[in-house]
Amino acid sequence: MSSEHSNRGGDERSRIEREYREMPGLRLTYAQVGRLAGLDRDSCDALLRSLVDARVLTQTKDGCFVRVEHVAAIKSSVRRKARTQAA
Image (tube, rainbow, N blue to C red; front, side, top):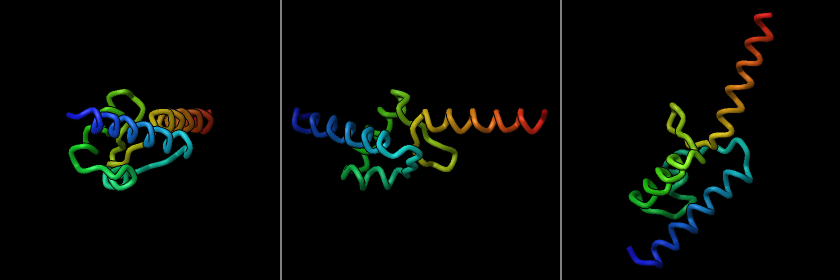
């Protein structure tokens, strides 16, 4: 892999991370991430895998990629609501 390709991959990863930070609740499909980043299938796979492995993103049951913190906040809210209704 050339250093130019390596740098581009890092730039795209930073860009995708920034998009997710700037837009809380952002949910993107695999295809949407690929289009946003302008990446081919293999590069998009590698990018998403690195973000999931780093626990920046997680993939939902319906295939969307969301920030890990967003999922944790939703689960916490649902648990709180369930406890309140049970009381």
